[in-house]
Image (tube, rainbow, N blue to C red; front, side, top):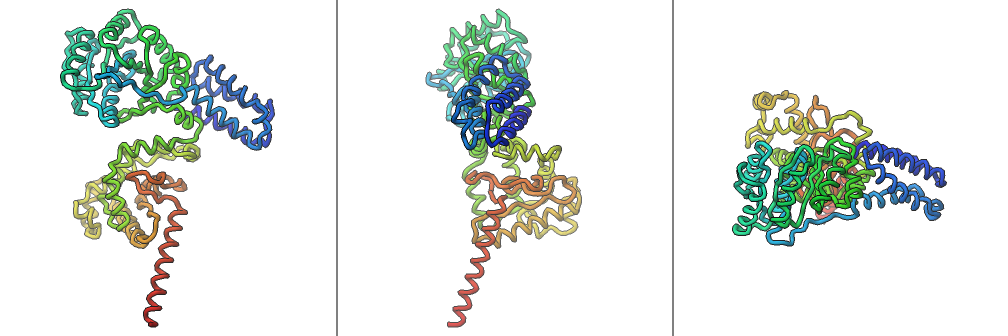
Length: 506
C-alpha cells in the first residue's frame, strides 16, 4: 500500500544523507518534498500541515544542525513523528466483560462480515477465546449465509438468525444464547448502507443500547482514502467508535486513510486486514508501520508470522533431519508449502530491512511463486517411494513425472541433480554449524537461485536466509555462514587425518 510513499521519502532522505552538514535551507527543501509526498498519498491536508510543523520545529534545532550525522537524525525525527501520527502504540481490544461484546459497523462493501470471521479466528487461535458470531445484517442478500459459511469453515459457532427477524432482536437473543452456551466473546456483524442515513444510525444506536458493547469497531476500506476518514468521523459522532479496522491494506491504495484517521477521528487503528485469507488480520503497530513506510522493514511482524503459521514440533523434527542429512523431497515440498503460508515472497521481502530497495532495483523481475508451484507439481507427480528415494527414478519414471507435472524431462532431471548435490553438501557439513541452501530451479524456469531460507526461486544476487531463530524455515542462505561452516568441516577432517597418522605411528 505504501510503496509510492516509501519511494518518494527514500529519495528525500537520500538527498539529506548526502549533505555533510545541514542548513536551514536544506531542511526546508527536504520538508517541502516530504509534504508533497504525503499530500500525493492522499493524507488529510490539515494532518500534513501539523506533521510538517512538528518535524520542522525539531529538525531546526541546533543539536541536529551541528550533529556529525544530521541526515540520520532528521530521519529519526520523521520516524518518531510518524509513529505519533499513527497512534503512538498498539491498542488492545477491551475483552474484560463476560461475555465481551464487539460490535462491528461500517458501510456496505467495507469488509465487515469477513472481518468478523477473521477476528473470531484470531481470538480463538491467539487468545484461546470461545467466540460467537452473530449475523445481524438482514438487508444485504446472502449476508447471513456468508457468515454462516465462514463460521462452518472455521468451526466456530454462529447464531441461527433469519432475514425476517429484527437486527436488534437478533443481537439481544444472540447475547442471551452466548451466556447460556459459555461463549466469552460475541461478535455482532451489523448491517451497512451505501451511504450514511438516519435509519441506519437509529438501528445501530438501538443495538448499542441493548447489548452494551465493550468495543465498537468501525471497518473502513483503505482503498477509499479520505472518504473512509470522513465516514469514520460520522460514525464516531453518533455511536462513539472505540477503534478502527482498515481492510485491504495489501492493495495498491496510497495509504492516506491509515495516516489520517487517527488524527481526524481521535480513534486508534486497532486491526488491519492484510489479505483475502481468514488468517490475514494483524494488530496495528504504529512503530512497525512507520518503519515500513520509511523502508526500514519489519522483522518483528515477520517473526510473528512464522511463529503463528509454523508448528514448533514440526520445525524441530525438520531441523533434526537437516542435521542428519535425511532431508527428502517430501520434506522439501513441506518447506515450500510452509513458506507459502507466510504470504507472497514480495510481501515478505518488504518486511526485511533493506530488501525493499533490492526489490525496487530488480524492476520487472517476477517473484518465484509460479516457479515454486512448478517444482511442487514435479514432486507431486512422484510416488511416495520416489520422493523418499530419488535414486529410484530412472528414464521411464522421469518421463511419467514430466507428463504428470506438465514439465519436461530436462526439468525433472535438473531438479533431481540439484537435490542430490544438496544432500551431498549436507553430508559434508554435518560437523559444521551452517546449513546448506536448497537446490536451484531447473533450466527453463525464470528464476534460478535460492529464496530466503534456502527455498528455490529467488532472483540471483538476492541475500538468502531468514532471520536467525525463525521456526520452520532453515537458514543458511548467508554466504559468510556457508564459508565458515565449510572451513570448520575441512578443519575437522584435517584433524581426524592427523589423529589417524599419530595412531599408526604408535
